[in-house]
Image (cartoon, rainbow, N blue to C red; front, side):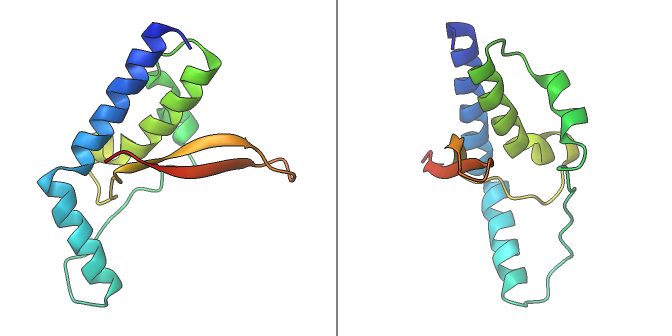
Length: 115
């Protein structure tokens, strides 16, 4: 990965962490906990982006190396709901790191703690 891509990845990871540490996410995390505890709260709305992520994320991408684009796609996917749709999707302080293919041909991810 070249230095330009690395800086882009660092900027996106920093942005995700800033969003995740925001008072808005703290409040949203409590709202999701309350909802899961069957407490009566305002409805929470999320936009399911998996079916159209390939239409939304690639135009935002700036990295040129394959490794950089993989990281960039994942990090943009983590913040896109908050940044572009303003829904109630919770932004975590961790991210899933791509490891390798498993024996079934699928990706293997592991959660990595940012802060």
